[in-house]
Picture 1 (tube, rainbow, N blue to C red):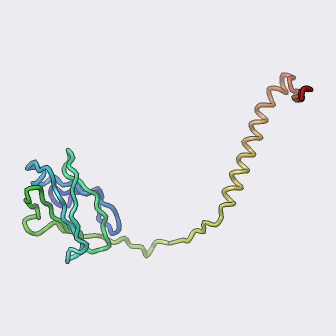
Picture 2 (spheres, rainbow, N blue to C red):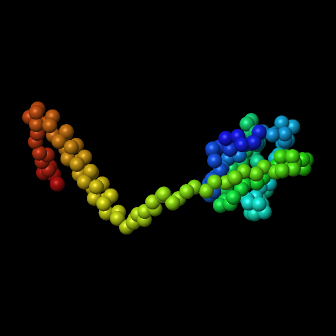
Picture 3 (cartoon, rainbow, N blue to C red):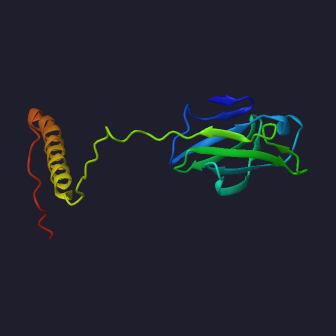
Length: 155
């Protein structure tokens, strides 16, 4: 998704408590900067302010960021020469959506029931063993070579 020219996200919406990949192909990338850092925060007051190095690729500078539970995601970028791309002084500001969980039904699933899996596993093993014995025995019955193995007298 491209919300602003030269800024791309790997998702259609920025949602709280999710991981988003940001790709930047703006002026700092076009001017062949070697290193670009993203300076980002959340909300109107830039809470949880963080600065991180972006990885240079053929598609631009990229980074993955954990979006916090806030109203906006704000950032600006700077290179190794301390040149800034801050959207002409306005910074890059994107709204963060909050998924509606009122229609979600949360169920507690007890984990203390491993016996059901174990019983079904044992039954399936018994069935497979029985089928294997039948498949091995049928040719012997048809050919008449079905004899029980006798223990050798040497023991």
